[in-house]
Image (cartoon, rainbow, N blue to C red):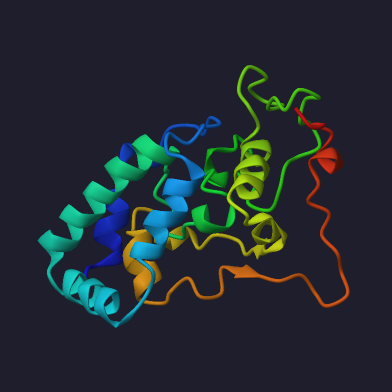
Length: 188
């Protein structure tokens, strides 16, 4: 088993820089297709278990994951990936690191309150989820991050079932309004 303390101490620099909204560099269709290929099953569970038992293998895989996901999604290696439920727009690139929707400062043109020249991560998430036919995923509530997981491989955590309870449906009877108009961004 890889020591958690080692992972945090060797945390990639990507997670140490301030978050800036990031537009994914892969189509939403391609992202969902890739996710179907690596969906949790016995094979991937065995791969994850094997990787965790060999520290250099785990570090190498985690490093490759960090480089790839940083380039494609602006990944900050939180170890608890929300990409599949946010249209593959990383909520951790929100300057306020909001994981359950936009703040009240989204500009009318969809710009970020903190970086007005950048598009709000949550506007991108809405557009991408709608385009990919996964708009209902945005109604899932993201639980707070476990800060101890920063720097870990979110793929290994996913395959090992450690993120089973990261997202939850709202309480029965409650409706989460995910329309773009509800965040003041309007439809482009």
